[in-house]
Length: 240
Length: 243
Ligand SMILES: Nc1ncnc2c1ncn2[C@@H]1O[C@H](COP(=O)(O)OP(=O)(O)OP(=O)(O)O)[C@@H](O)[C@H]1O
Ligand SMILES: [Mg+2]
Image (cartoon, rainbow over all chains, first blue to last red; front, side, top):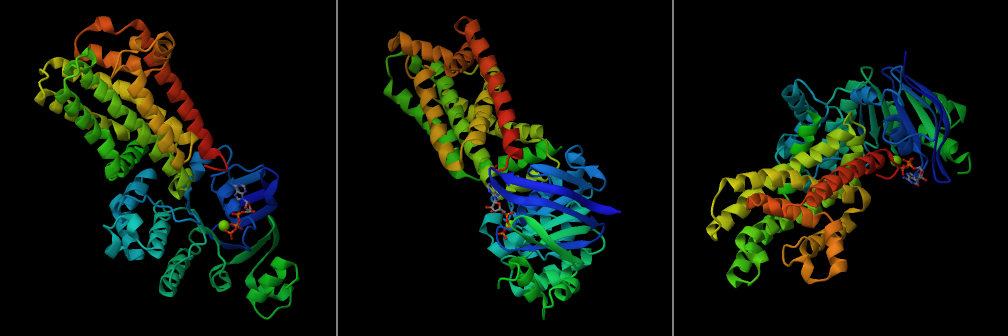
């Protein structure tokens, strides 16, 4: 069964076409990496898939539900770690976790929160106000929050942006631990991240989804040495 | 309850901003105290009339800081995240309104403690006034939500202080509208602040004659309209491309 089905998805901001007629099916448990240069339309795609903005045209089917009709039901089972860190600035880390647990009406709230504290090693910052944390720590909290409702579908928009090497590797471990269990769509500008984490990779350029495949398939297709070269070739149409 | 959960977060966010408390509580208390020392020979400044004025004045800052909170939330990615959660528009609006009610009650209680220390006699009417003022405050809170849904965080302070000025000049807290002329008098009658003040004043002084039917109609009409418009605007913002 498919977890996400996208048909002819288009988003226009006034006369700017940010996402241009994308169709894609993502299987349950798949980790799909969405790559593309700045402004390619990755974040806009994620915003539409997560019900934050409305498509100009096209359909989005999530777990066999139409996002236009079953918006609230779909929102219960997904979560997003936005490109910009999203936490309540004047609340402590603990309060942020409790607040978001309330937003999703989590039943075994304390167990869930303690689990996340352990997974993301949040002990040392637990009672600090979110706005006083460093950028990387804020991001870790923001990502931890996105797991609070045990989502069936998780969108990670540049999750490792601003994380140090160790934190990045730790997050990879967390993501690998989720692989197969939930459907993940991840965007990143780090090629090795896409390569080592994802089942399939989609490359966007100017709002279009121009290629989809495993990293090996994409490398083979454009006959390049490694994935980074393959990405550059595909994304630029061979200009570089 | 999602609504209560959101209200709890808003309340924490509000009381952790010390500047808002200075304007919502300390400034009105200060004015109440100062104007009783000056002894202005005008009925408006009698404790039983000026205390209701101070309550409305305090509410105008509630409008300002509600507007700032809503505009700030809209500008931050927190609301983007909440936009992908199953929260409904009613959860947001009621969550905002509920979070301010404790602050309204704190204001009322402190204002009356100071007024009693300055010589106001304690009667059961004070309790009624507090209850009625909570109803009146809903207009000021929703007005803040409306402004916060319309303008940016930066502009919300400016627009909010227009409300503060309007309350000072058109509510009758400092001077009677009849002193300034017909035209101005009409403006005061059309705007809701004089009506709000009359309702509170009448309740405190157990003097229902000063509450005109017009006052009640204006208050109900404004509260209803502002609530509806703020819900529509907020909802529109939550689904728009630019929050
Ligand atoms: N609210 C908006 N109004 C107008 N244009 C927008 C809006 N949001 C995005 N765009 C435009 O849509 C295009 C795609 O933006 P998007 O944020 O989806 O890119 P992205 O692939 O996520 O880029 P990045 O890697 O830099 O995050 C850009 O040209 C951007 O300027
Ligand atoms: Mg982006």
